[in-house]
Length: 401
Image (cartoon, rainbow, N blue to C red; front, side, top):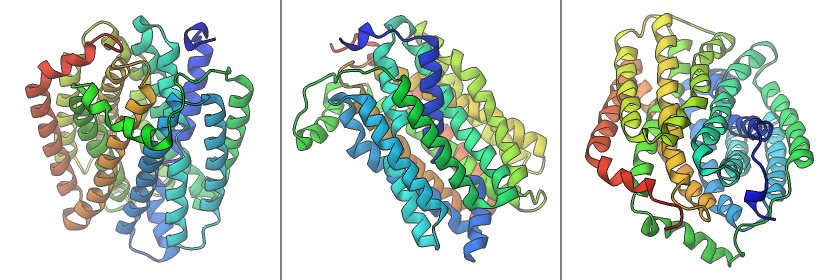
């Protein structure tokens, strides 16, 4: 049996989306809780960005050193193992007695919270070429929903029972999901014969030589998702916790719901790729990012404006993410896990920088500095798009050519 003999049904696509969303959400439970966590440990709120950075660095390491195995092993077993380890890491977060232990627990959780990125290329493998963009859009929307749900739910839960309860509930949800995946996920054989681990890791880096459009895909995604997305959402917690808003974690969680717009529109974004419109659409989404950041700078004292900015930015970032990742999976069927490794490590290196910059910029000049930096990144991304459109077309090449 091979991948193509397994039918990608709507039920399976939705299951993939839910599991991926829950997995990726583990990386974002902490974001609305940063002020509460820092208060609990008696540390400055600005240091909270380091928790996000630790999580993202761990995630990047898990993607780099574990995810490439997805091209060479049975993915059902791989998904089950990393999800069980995620449960254990979440429990460790819940009982952490100090900032250092919590940082290490979040770092460890990041390493093993990769099941969503195993599932996403698997969805590409099981999809027909003429519907791959749509399927990737569905699963990506699940990932976006997971990010937003984790922020929203963690703010509400922490408002009632404290931040530690968030990780207890997250561990329970992940345990239920791993049992469902073990029961429902079909057995899918490995795509390639296993190499030595050293050769496996080396093959990740040869993707740059094999696919000349890959650097452009990575740069677009890193600037928009990695930098702008993380700079905005990490700093938003600080903005809403301070004057004139002075919101608690519950209220901050409610504001995070604005990003659900991305999940709603994300399902259809992949069809732009299927119809051959991805290059102009990518440029349009980058322009939307720039406009939203300028508006965030101009109307920072209005909660209505901030909610609208959050919603519009989320749609634009989702658009860039779906279009670049679908193009990525079209490069090579046999290398999708390794290509996804490069893609996600790239995003989360940019993301770690973005989260650290958010804390630094906030401490130096508050929201104004944050929005000016995000606007500058948007301009840089637009310049990259303008000068790389012809090279970016190489991502439309036939599979494995």
